[in-house]
Length: 160
Image (tube, rainbow, N blue to C red; front, top):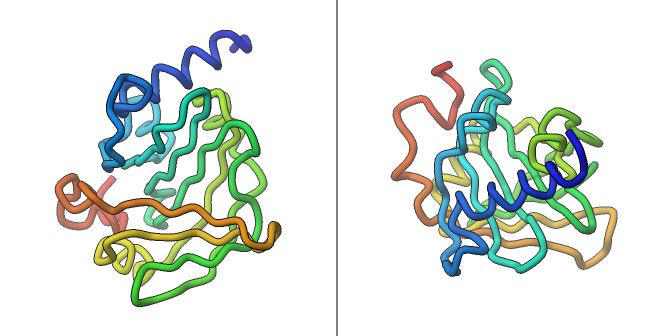
């Protein structure tokens, strides 16, 4: 995929997820079909001009995953703390997911999460991810719309 196609793919993802198209709401949506083929089930993206910053939930087999997609400074990598009020958890993002990065036209990584973390994310009004590599850096995401898109077993990766 050429660089221009990658950028176009990132812009299309943002627009498809109601970003860069005049909508500022941060709402979880079903992942586009090409992303679902790579195990990404749901996505939420920030409405920041010229940047793609998304968090996803997905499955690798029956393992639940948190997925980071970011242009600019790159996806989360290594140890993070996840706050899903009132609970906090530790997770570790892989260095890079080349297939997802190529599709998104941005850096992408994945973190395996337990069913307890997945359920806590579902139950929380928002989640905050703290990057252990960069003191003070964190991102907060709304969980608005998350429950609406889930079917029984979806979040816990019980269905293909």
